[in-house]
Image (tube, rainbow, N blue to C red; front, side, top):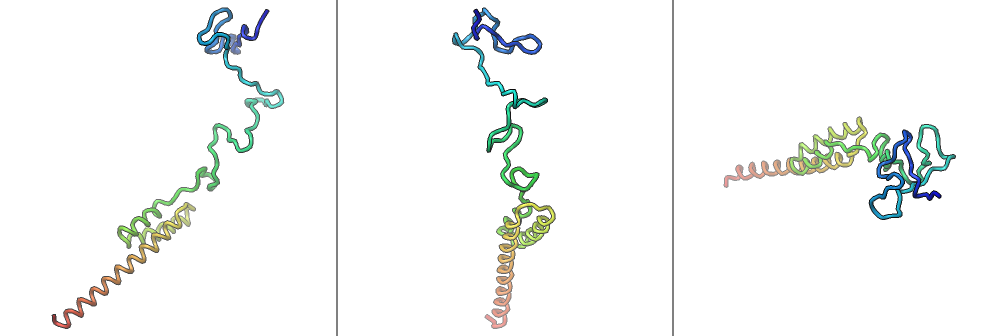
Length: 154
């Protein structure tokens, strides 16, 4: 009389799968438990050359592909941001004329490469332009003040 626990599966070449004990030998672990049983695919789902596990359910991705989050085609996580655009915004606060120039260059690059960062480059241009204009006005007022003081003869 044969029970399901007495039968062992064999590999296609006649060997045993790892962790399976030959019949009649006690195995390690809890008695009465055999190897894990996995559900077998239905014959209608099997196709030649592919495993018969069926199509993934709605909203599930196959194991080998990363999820797609709606970026540009070819970029699964979105388009990359132009590095010069980031640099232009940083330089606009550190050295404003350089932020203004790098922002202009970054916008030209973004139009050619279709990268993200157009808003950062525009912000670098605006902030760099305003700070540069304020600095130029400050120098002009300082020069006018110096000329006015020297002409009065203090």
